[in-house]
Image (tube, rainbow, N blue to C red):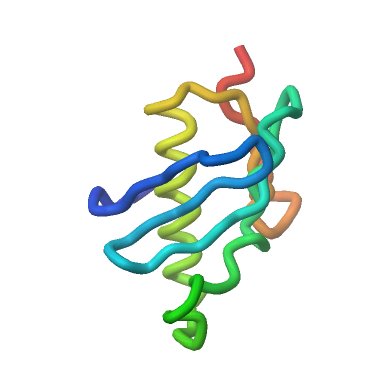
Length: 96
């Protein structure tokens, strides 16, 4: 898994996280109250204004997903599941 180091992830609420790259930010729904919150590839859709019109290509979405997985798994040590867009790509992290 390749991840980019010039990003930031914030969890301002039990209901979502914020992903930042420079001035670009997106909010992803993720319910941290669940025993195994689900991070969904499908939640990576659009940057917040004023960048909402910038398209996000599939490769970029995969990069964002990898960055968030790294942050949640390695930095925060959360238990969570990932819906990578297909059942073959779904995975559970930190389930020990």
